[in-house]
Image (tube, rainbow, N blue to C red):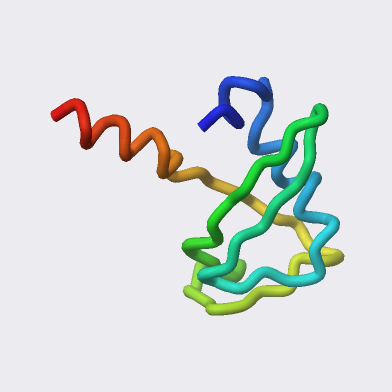
Length: 83
C-alpha cells in the first residue's frame, strides 16, 4: 500500500520495471526495488492487445505495457477489521 504513497507516478514506474521481465503469468508474484525499498505485486489479470482477451501468460519484452492497480491486500484487511 506504500507504493502509491511513496511514488508520484506509480503506473510509469511499474511499466518501466516490467521491462526487466520477459513474461508474466497470472497468479504469480513479482517484486522490484525502487528507492531502496522492495515492492511486491500479485499478477491477477492479464489481457492482450488489441482486443483485451484474457490470458494466463503474456510476453512483456519488446512491447507496450499498460498497468492498472487493485487496492493493496493490507489496505483491504485494515478496512475489514474496522467494520
